[in-house]
Image (cartoon, rainbow, N blue to C red):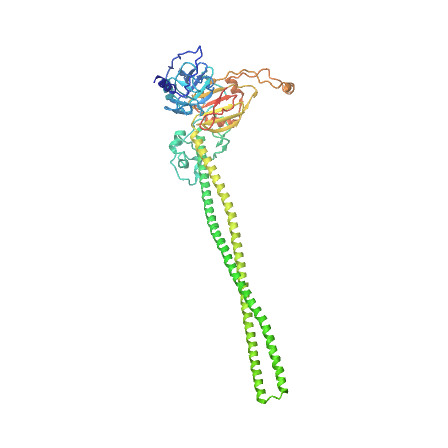
Length: 610
């Protein structure tokens, strides 16, 4: 029973296969120290030191709490990196390690790294997670939100107040109007320019309450201003820094103005979506009509082909009748030729007998009787000739009739074949139209899906606008990435001075506004890598050519937070685009590393393993 209980206890936490403790490991961890409760809206930064096995929580005023932890043991090391809380669950069970309990779980990666309550033996003992004391895990769970920044480093680091002229400011709030209620998508192009959050977007994904929660109010458009659009699926941006405006210059860009443009984009794309839906409906109706026509035409072809068989049978029968009539006439003529020869023989015999009777001495009565007999025979032969002539006429007439019937049947059969050919040609034409109709339908469906995607992006841009942004500049890729609410919203190239020199990894967190105008931000900086100043060595065989073409730099810049900001160059348009999303809770990360493979759907921008 003791063994069973011990086994169950061993599964009571996630990643609890405990590694052997080092000989000099401390068996008792230092205590939890909660100095105070953070302000509800104050963005937090959590720092985990793997070497000290310690977690610290900071807000804008400094240290909030500190606690011992137990990170990943050898072979299952907890990765260093810049993470954020992706998911929170009071009651959670591991789907990797025997369904082990993970109380007060706060996920850092979707591959299995999290903070949660667990056993703390005083040394790294987990399978990669960061274990916390149970009571503190509950306190920390109540302090954090999804998106809270978590920095895991080898050595302890601490956010410090930091100022630099290249740190971003926010746009001023601007003048706002109360959102109007939802309306029908009529005349969207006319009404969308100055509409509130409660427009067609309320019907198609953004309710006034949701948009108001995300953005509160929408600015009135400046007369004559037309919202534009740039890279990143966002409205047009002024190249001005937003520090002021002249009387005759363009109006100062404000957050409310951007919100109005975002709403206008939603309305415009809702109208496009409605038009694409109409296109799909028309394409579907055209397809239905073509399918019905094709079905009817196939029936006509089938019936016409069936008619060919009937007409062929009729033609065959008529031709048979014709041949039979022709055969009867031919047989009759041949028979009559023989009969005429016999009649001619009898006539010749009668003539010879008549001549013989004239020279004979027969009695008158005998001669008259013989002559009468010959006359009667002659009359019979004449009648037979007349009957033969009449019969031949009948047979010739019958043959003519049968010939006409065969010719008519041949014409009908030919016409039937022409009818089949016509129906088949019409069927082929409808089939070609149907193929084109199907292509048009597929194209309209694709355009509809694209319109839905663009509409969702516009809604997402509005929903994400008032969420803190994470901006990451990577020396490895030479790009700037922006995410809000775990979704990509912008990407642009940047120029980094001394691109061959390491820049380090630095995290700048905006913890609040530093002025009543709500434009200047109060920043905290954390440098989490220890990078030397030396430049990477060039290949030996190219050193002389490089030295001749370009003088070697005597010393590379030191990778400090101040230097990192100084080396980043971007256009005014990019800087204005970043200003639009800057607000308390936003983070700027500058690093040598590319984005981690852990960065994906439902994550913030993650930098891992420096």
